[in-house]
Length: 107
Image 1 (tube, rainbow, N blue to C red):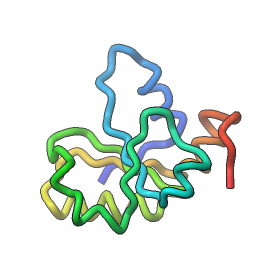
Image 2: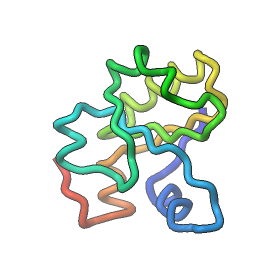
Image 3: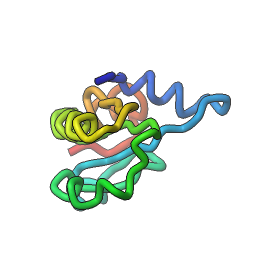
Image 4: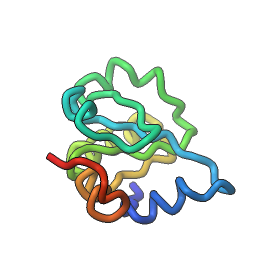
């Protein structure tokens, strides 16, 4: 599994010449309501097995959570289910707030 730092992901998202990955936020709805990376899709971790069919196994997916632990487990689950282009956001939204967007609220 690949890992990406928040600053690297921000640079990719800001580069209009690069294809945008699916930003899969696996936190709980209340967490997603507090703060999120713009364009992220909410799909809480516990619902991933039931909703896996909504995801494209060929699309690049960046898994996001609060600090990077839950997203790591979801990324590993996706890989074990045939997804070939999965990336974990190291540091999660907390790292994003520190490295990429200091205006983002933290919790």
